[in-house]
Image 1 (tube, rainbow, N blue to C red):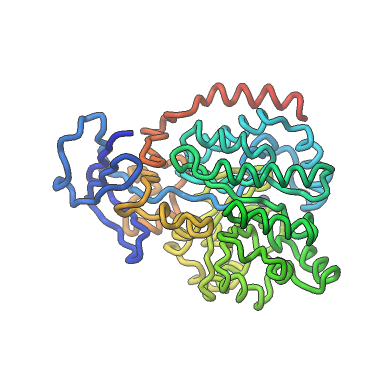
Image 2: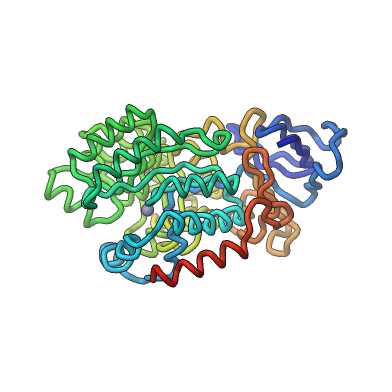
Length: 432
Ligand SMILES: [Zn+2]
């Protein structure tokens, strides 16, 4: 993999001191961040083609997309402006039943190309044909947390669970540590108690976490109260789901004060998806309350059929804006907090905060360089403010994942975009 030097950049570290370093050189050795130096004081013996001139660029820890269904790029724009249940039952699930493993592979690659271009260096995926998603991530050099989606109503649900457990055990830490695995029971309302208990046992035996949708709509919470006399969070807690390490809980829109206390105490990773929640009119998650309770909060895009893109910059901005509107308080979720949730917070929510989410020596080199030589990013009063309120995915200049450049000066290094477009186009004729 070799070494790389990013010279004379501004570095948003996302470390405990929230430091932003100017005129700094960043040395990457192998797959790790080796050191940070004031400009010109670092190593100078690297060949020219291993040195990136960082003047005018801002380095941030790559965005971590804490919840998505990446191959749903195939269904982007296929059904919009519908309520969640008819959208799933009438439009999405029928097409998904026709998907092949290779469809998922190419749909995932399309999503990865989009994410790398938007400075995303890791995604947490829950979908069918999980091996194809993991394979796509490794082929692209992308970091991924992968779980197979488990729906108890499918006729072969039990075999799928067995395969998912086997996959979780066999694939964790593959691809030089790029792939982390979890089990992905879809949601409390699609998975009965006895099945969830088998998932908990499987996660324990494979030593992996659990990724699940939780309390996404008011209807889901009302049904749970009616059928179990408990909120979805209370029910998951009773079944031991919240004791898995880690738990990535997507959405968490409709929570009681007791739910918030439980989620914070159990260190459950909240995967906040504001764009999807707004589009499906699910509601606004109580993020200010969760943050006040010191919960672990990250940000995700959700699948590209309900968003409709995988642009984490947009989700970070929405996270900062939505809660101001919702609370009537312009100080709710300030810019630094939103950016932290989209990087370090998401990494913590996925249980990988010890290796990514910050720029500091010893962390894996997952870094996005943002080009600030753009009119909408001038003048530079506040770098964090610009990243959250003014920057766009198109400003992402260069991306490193695990020490490897996957995009240099806006050119993808590991993916063949024209081929991906062709493959996806051909496959859609059969699917839709
Ligand atoms: Zn989802």
